Length: 345
Image: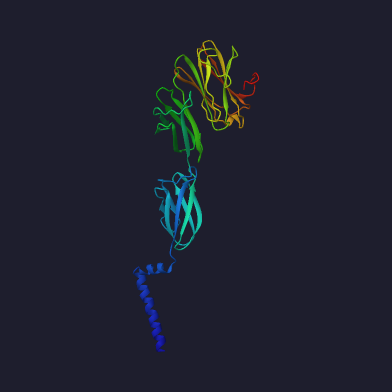
């Protein structure tokens, strides 16, 4: 009986002591001694578009067990968390949030790579001379995108990130070249390659310049200029002549996507011309080519034509030109109603 009373007293005493310790906050420490040690998650957050770490981005990683962490300047994070099945939420202001599940073991490191889909697009631009197709590297080029100024290095190339989906208007200018305004349609999570072909100002009797650019497909589009009176035809097989009839020449013929492909006219008083573009490679629909034609006279750009959304065929009849009046008249139709001699396509 005495032993039983003593045992009961000791047990009661231990309970009182533990109660006092817990009340003092020490009990919380005892709880963590009993709980299994934490595990660790080491991860990298990538941009799903560029496959690069999101260095310097505002991105948070949370697992519901604590306040979460912000990724480091190198795109990595370190998270200490209780063991077991964990659910991570990774989010950033310019990216779609992603949730994933993973198993974390006590006192062990779990490595993980997460890719976030951006809510923006990227434009990879190339700035070229429309007559030579060479990169413009001998001077700075002013580029304006909406209300944002971008300074271009002397390589002739640039990458512009975080462009909202939709149409972005680019304005380019440089000494000795006509200004260029170009609308670029960019999709969400898309990298878009664009050629910005700047036409040199016209000199030495040049009267008109026609600059064709397009997208990646079709691979090969061809410019065709017809003199309706003399029946002379300038294209890649007959590149013309600067000082003799037909007083028009093909400056550059591009066969591997994007362009530019350029024609220049000179001493053309009294002549009438038709300008066409032919889908030479034909591996995709003309209407999806994103083809654009810019026409320049001595005072600058006079017309811009974009491929129509309707029509069927491999010929795009773009415009007519009356050299006497200087008038450029829009046709802008896709069709196959073009009669040529054999070998003239």
